[in-house]
Image 1: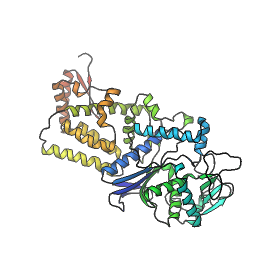
Image 2: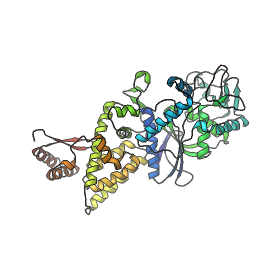
Image 3: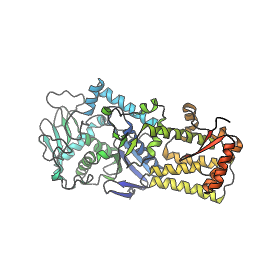
Image 4: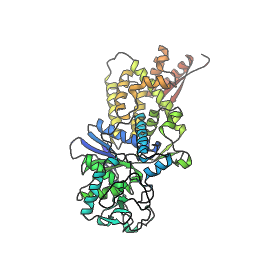
Amino acid sequence: MKLFNTMSRQIEEVQPPAPAKLGLYSCGPTVYDYAHLGHLRKFTMDDLLVRTLRHQGYQVHFVQNITDVGHLASDADTGEDKMEKGAQKYQTTVWELAKKFEEHFWYSMQLMGNLKPDVSPRATEHIEEQLKLVQELEAKGFTYVIENDGVYFDTSRLEDYGQLARRGDLAQLQEGARVEPVAGKKHPTDFALWKFERPGESRAMVWPSPWHERSFPGWHVECSAMSMKYLGEQFDIHTGGIDHISVHHPNEIAQSEAATGKKPFVRYWVHHNFLMVEGEKMSKSKNNFFTIDDVMERGFHPLALRLLFLTAHYRSEMNFTWENLAGVHKSYLRLLETLSQFKRESGRTVLSEDKLEKIDRYRQQFFAELANDLNSPAAVAVMWEVVKSNIPGVDKHELLMDFDQVLGLGFSQADQILAKWGGTAVTAVELPTEVKQLVADRESARQEQNWELADQIRQQLLGHGFEVKDTPQGAELIKKSNF
């Protein structure tokens, strides 16, 4: 398995120190509001990564946190805690807010077909671990206290701080450019490990600490404390959005490696690119903030959205449009109809050596694409090639079911999904036997690039009342109204 490692800016072979065992940590949601489509894309591609690694034979211990405290409104150490802000918006307590939106997150993940992590630690349930980490850093001389503000990490103590972000000369980083100025900070890149409730504030989520009676963890410290608790001081893969490259993940690395005596924290950093909506960044002010509920209310199956996500590489920016989703939804239902047809085909025949080699070649190509930095668009293209191929339907069905172990498109529930959502095209089970044979013959002719014969068969199908429309997903038959 090869992955692009943000730290080296190169595609590298995944080589865990323990044979076939991998620890993987995913930066999870901050549960102050609904999970939107951008979140769904990131977590769906994480799911594809975990499924692919497991199919490759790795034993993956998958940890994904729940941020329910400490995430301030900016990447700096100023502003409101997002949980406090969300509670004000929805007129509820922070504890009820966290419960509501964590439940909605898992509901969204289930609809998207995403596997649950092995461990889903909440920040509020790991205060002791976070406090211990900050105290270790204090004992080693990496911290200082700003009165009425918090405990800060001194980034000048690390020669290689910011290596992940490739910042170069940190002295040139202008205060207020990426992080907002905080009075009392020694260096622009220093960050809060532990925050204090300020005079006049009345926060709902506070805990006693050695530095202040009413205090709470910084956003960055929770990921280090929880990942190291469940995966050890060093682990293999850490995922997140590309927006984490500049601040959050460099801070995780700094505090983790400072605490463990410069042990390399993570071997492979995997970052997902953004999802744009109609060419713009998703935001509520632009009214393009959409959730899984919006997808279903518009009549689209959630797994069609998953298929849409798979058509773009995780490191590429993706533009979402409802028109694109509508097209993929139609293709998805057509694919399920075709799968149902393949499943109904009975009786195996002895396959020729050529067809056996073709099946093996498809299987190897599909998994090789995913093993090459999770190239999902190329893998999906192989899937459609199998659908259009001239190998027997029963063998196609078996091969596609194998593919779906990593694609997660619900192929095993094809009949149930179709029963609820309905079909979109003429299925093979509705076709006369002679028409089915003509379709198969035409596809064979196309595979052999015998275009003259394929056109002749197209005319024969017209004589039976069916027009053939070739699509990237295969031939679609349209029944003529005058027959």
